Image 1 (cartoon, helix red, strand yellow):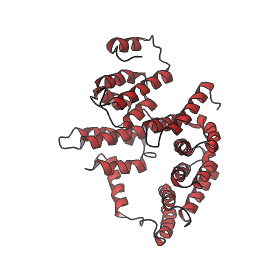
Image 2: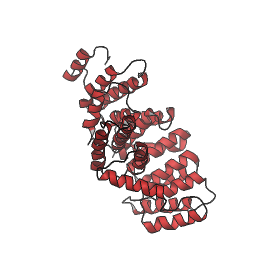
Image 3: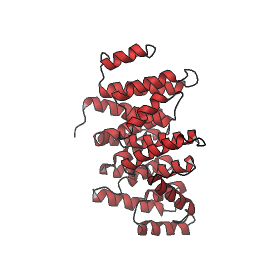
Length: 328
């Protein structure tokens, strides 16, 4: 499918944003999310930009390609593994996305590469472990043979490590609707599973986490951060199944929220979110929550552009009338 000129311009701007912001920042995460949503139509441009991009940009490109999962990514991800450090770790993630690809050659190439890197003693230790972790969803016989070799080299914990088992049990309980007591542990379990969990499961977890936040003795900040991570996970997969919760959370916010909320609303918000965004912007303290207000403005502008909302529409007239201080 040919990419439209306007969309091509968006892709170039998003790639530029990857290089101007660090990994884990809101701008970086938003750029990755938007590129992931554009999907296969962005792949040609991403692959063309990769060889000449700066290191930080290459990391972002690989993160976006992981979310897209296109078989054409294989040679670029294999090359990324040769670079070491953070680029190689991001490349391992991109290869992980190809393990269940319908393209047999891409799936086999990704598997062979990840196994080879896992067992290559000359590689940087954290890169070897990243490659091994990418094999997490493979059949037990594959993981067990690789794990045994790594264990002999003293590189990784045995597959039945209790910390891993606890994370698996925590996740299984959460799928059934029972959350643990530690939001930090839950978020760690989520990070490893969010990309492949059913969308309906993530939506139900958002409801469960929101209920936990309301409990008298709950770590509200911790669970709110988890809910933001769940929303970002859905946004990275282009899903709006929980957009209602995102919209309501913004409308009720009286201070800044975790940055994942800004990333999610920027990536998948629609016209129905605009009034909630301005409500949150208005409720936030201009001095204490300046960054949050900037993030909300950026999300508002992105939605206007994406939805092609006219400034003369009834919605925009209503916003200007109710919040004249919010320049649109």
